[in-house]
Length: 210
Ligand SMILES: Nc1ncnc2c1ncn2[C@@H]1O[C@H](COP(=O)(O)OP(=O)(O)OP(=O)(O)O)[C@@H](O)[C@H]1O
Image 1 (cartoon, protein in one colour):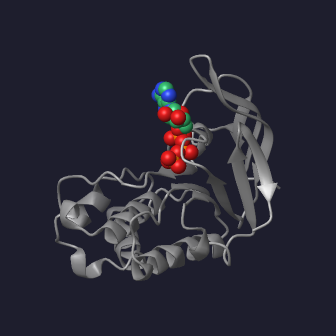
Image 2 (cartoon, rainbow, N blue to C red; image 1 turned 90 degrees about the vertical axis):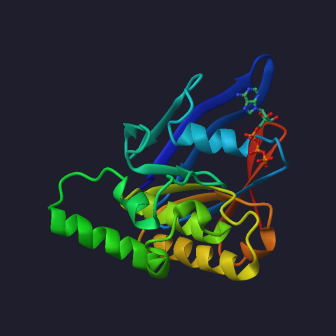
């Protein structure tokens, strides 16, 4: 069963064809490393799969339904946006419906602990380190329980320790059955973890051995 499935995708900027992708699919528990040179179109592909950019043609479906931003698929930018308030209030800014106040509070606490940010609870989010920001962005996203995570350079500018912390969160999501598609220019840290690599090159998407 595919979680995310896309067919007949293409993207142009003006006359320039960025990529053409006949089909792709992502399964539960899959961790896929999307590679490609600068400018090959990785970010544009992730945003297209997240429903954040309009389709020129074809379709992108999550469990058989057209993708819609924020519904089951999340896209996280390499420099996540931080609301200009505390870490805790950043979690409070995420709209979550269908939970009692107490259950929502517990869910936020769990997300904070999951991301290893309990000590930073009252810290202004904009003062967090790069790794802490990435982890807070993941904790916020987790509140909406996406089943597909599209992570754009989650390890960029992180030292080894911070990268390991982020990778642990990614592995935890994967173990829980989420599908993760991520880009990175630091292949070394990913080769042991990813089941599959996709190379975006000259407008085509190629599955590739690591
Ligand atoms: N809105 C836009 N209008 C015109 N060109 C764009 C637009 N957005 C992106 N591009 C171009 O499309 C190409 C692909 O950009 P994209 O950010 O998807 O590449 P990338 O593979 O993620 O690159 P990097 O590894 O450097 O992050 C680049 O040449 C970029 O300048």
